[in-house]
Image (tube, rainbow, N blue to C red; front, side):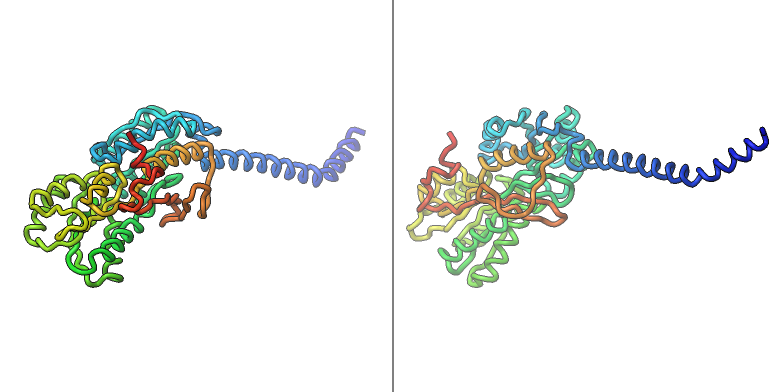
Length: 367
């Protein structure tokens, strides 16, 4: 009986073995699926940046400025706390990198060490900022770039105006009001995508549309002293200059006007010998110069909107929200840059004597 019972048990076991194996496989599949779902959920959290920030978009935000010697950046700095409040962002006191790309990387690291959940950075150098962006990505902290797009590195959004259009608008204005002769472009830092795009756009536009103009160039690195010294030298050799394009009124306006004045070349618009001047920034000082007939036009770079949408996009990034290319609800267009980076290109209107008093221009609202 014992032997018979053992053989029966073996036969029963053999009959049940296939069912047991199928059950084991089903259990393994179920466990694997559960693990896969769990891992996918973790990956989703990292992809949206929620590992470094709260899912509801809350947490401290660091804001890093490139410099504070320009009225444009002073205005942006003043707008930051106001726009942070209006957008519901808990922004720390701004940090000034003082025109030093290496210091800016240190500033990024210092903010990360303070446990910020998001960063809004205005890069000084489009290539150098990659080191700071990589630090933030390793800690799962999203970054929004303002004014300057990085060449490489991960950002949730670039908040910027179309800098190619800046150069083209300046070109068209000088082409229409000068016609022929020598014009100067006082360029920004070519390590910045802004300086490169404005310079190349102006140069290409003149070559294509206004061949009677001759372009002379001053690389000035966003430095007022450099601009003044090189403009003085250039005017000594070329006293017949008819037009000037300043890529940043915040740093170039005062030294340019002073240099022209010292040479008795600063003539009001409408007077014989007037040098047609177009600028970029939209600061109150440029508007005053337009009203006085010292310069003729500027492109209003939206300091207020830079602050507002810098805060808007960092809050969205901390909440894991993403965006697609196309028109926005605030009169701008999101475009995809090289490397898949998204950029919200905000409006930047040309300002002349005809619209310089428009109350909607941010340069007419600052105190």
